[in-house]
Image (cartoon, rainbow, N blue to C red; front, side, top):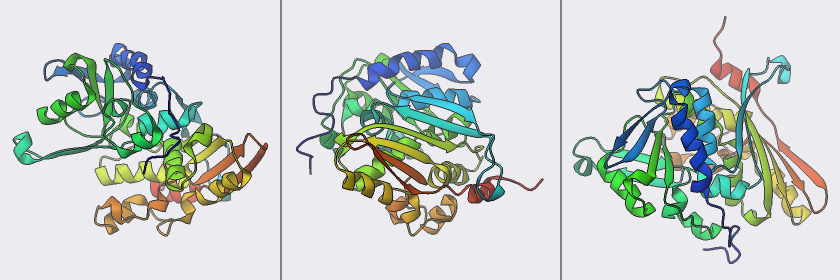
Length: 340
């Protein structure tokens, strides 16, 4: 059911226009960032950020900002202090901030556009991916856009896919048709999770994961006015399931988010209490293990798990702040570190 007061009704910000300068930077600094680009299907620009190209963490940070539609910052920082229970803190963390978190995270970054093609359609191997980034807002194929009350209009668009091969022509046709773009106006960035850029841009979704969970809990999205998140950046694994598991674990057990909201204190307090991942029945084990036990079916996993580990919620209208959850760096250390 569409919200009668959608969070972004009347918003004139273009996430695709906002991402444009970042896409240009990615292409202009391709050699430095370890990415490559090529033209396909009449002029569609395909950026390889981790398939044949090496990619880099720096490229992943830029892709993270592209996914946010230019409405947020994504940066790398170090952490020198000791963690809980005497564990040394993880050396690299990804910080995300946005003053337009609903539009940046749900209207752009969220991986919500399902793209699939059969063997018959591809002429070979079947294809599946979840598209994320600004071009989602051109197509508006997800019910979420009706709830947000937002659609973008732009002559250019960019989509990010966590895949290890170039999308087949049938998928590129679909993207162009639904986005209303000419081939030269579309950029598709490939960031397999097994790559440096892929791991980085997924961990950069720590704030988006909090926004999505807040939406699932029924919190009024229009009352979320700012957000910041941070999560540890693991080394990518060459195994696809392990790589995906590490990026999820980074957020579920190491993610910390601070949301700034307006409205009533009861709603803000309840959000801080209910949002953290610790409320899931699946909490406490590696995501890769949980995924295997679920027979590789995301829908068999408790949805409450998909949330950051620790949350603060500050209400601008009252000046009060609530806290919920906690990180588990000991678990992450046990999953990510080898004995010396």
